[in-house]
View 1: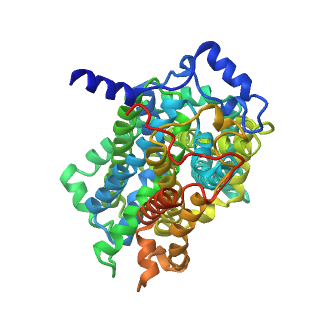
View 2 (view 1 turned 180 degrees about the vertical axis):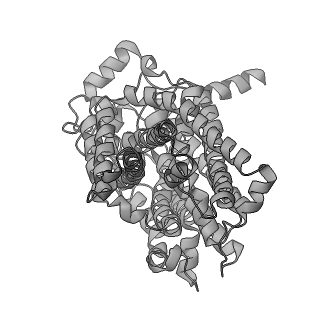
View 3 (view 1 turned 30 degrees about the vertical axis):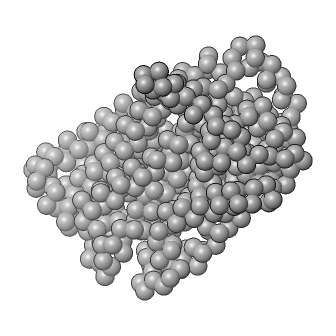
Amino acid sequence: MTASRDTRQTAWSAIDVPEGATLVSLKAEVAGSPLYNPDLAPVGAAERTWNTWNITALWISMSAVLTTYTLASGLMMAGMTWWQALLTVTLGNLLVLIPMLLNAYVGVRYGIPFPVFVRASFGTVGAKAAAMARGLVGCGWFGIQTWLGGLALSALMTHFWSPWAQIRGHQFIAFGLFWTLQMAIVLRGMRAIKRFETMAAPMLIVLLLLLFLWALIAGQGFTAVLRNSDLLAKPSTHTFWEIFWPGLAANVGYWATLSLNIPDFTRFARSQKAQILGQSIGLPLGMMGTSFIGIFVTAAAMGIFHETLWNPITLIPAISQNGWILVIAMGAILLAQTSINMGANVVSPSNDFSNLAPQAISFRVGGIITGVVGVLMCPWLLMENASAYIFTWLAGYGSLLGAIAGIMITDYWWVRRRQLSLRDLYLQDGVYPRWNGWAFVAMAIAILPIIPGFVAAAQAPGGIVAHPGFFDQLYVYGWFWTFSVASFSYGGLRYFLGNAGIRSGKSEPIREGVAHD
């Protein structure tokens, strides 16, 4: 019995990446393939340096940002109380942790990034479409976080030089300066990003704790502050459940991007244990803690200043006009925005763009493309309304990415039984098809029914349809609907119809054997 348990444990923690001369030989064999470049290559043991703390720090630093700090505000503006909003945020992030861990497993085991992993389920050519869907969302997020960081920089410059605020387009100039700073980090590569994330996490925690301490003292105690939080919730004609389900789907959608491309990070992890513990601690703790501090500090500010100051960029100058305090606080905000952009919104789109033409686009070039596209997506328009941001932007792209996640997980864990051919993922004429038609059919089955609901939500005030019909109700469940329907549709199509919808020069078995079971 003990031997059997040990075998299963070894199977779960197995790393199937060749080492030494064998890895060099594999890379040499596929080096001439148009599907290969060094940035997409499998990561060997020598480069696997991320431990539990590195991964925990990654998640805390990516969570402790303005969009998380204000995440509960959209829910409370829609009618939730503070504890209902916090519960919704927490549940959403616990749920998204499930697909996150399942896809992260592949990164550790095979050392491959998301664009390579998705070739198994969508095909070596079809994967480009799936990767770009994820990549464009990442570009949108990069633009949003850069815009918010630019606002912090503009506020800081206004304090020290008041004529700055009179310059036409001063916020856009600050936005451009902050964008340039981040591009400089991108050009230094993945190792610089890892060092930046590890350094940023402790500083961000300190800033949040200082804001919390100010709120506790200035607000005259924990209980008094939470009583003020009731003033933050706006009256609503919607019931709790009408807000809860789309809010929950939107919170799952918040990290739906990373639930796909998490192998981009976990391929650098030392072990499965490191990635599982690091993510299970860092993601829920970072999101719940940052959201609660956002609620608590804003409630305290309501009691003191008698106005709702959700954004720390406007709150901090109200707390103090001391130059050093503003420099430190705004500097920490800029650090936070840079941190999440480097970790969540540069790595994956860069790999995704590189996957379009691996021989021509490196990680660094992909990062520059990400930055340019992020600007072209006009992030200042996406952030005009907090509720619309949650119920259209988050819920909308979460629905799209939910379908891709469902197909990837079903393909790897059920169809292939955790077995991939590392060599063939980099070859055009290997065992993997160029186009897996069933993946795209399953996506269409899942996504088409929610498009009418998305269109209606995009046109409704605050993103919530007053009198929802059937298709509006489907959209309410967004990510849950697309993930479930795409999973079952893809699994059923592959089980009953096998390779009939797959375009490939070679046949591909529906199941490639049972790996280590």
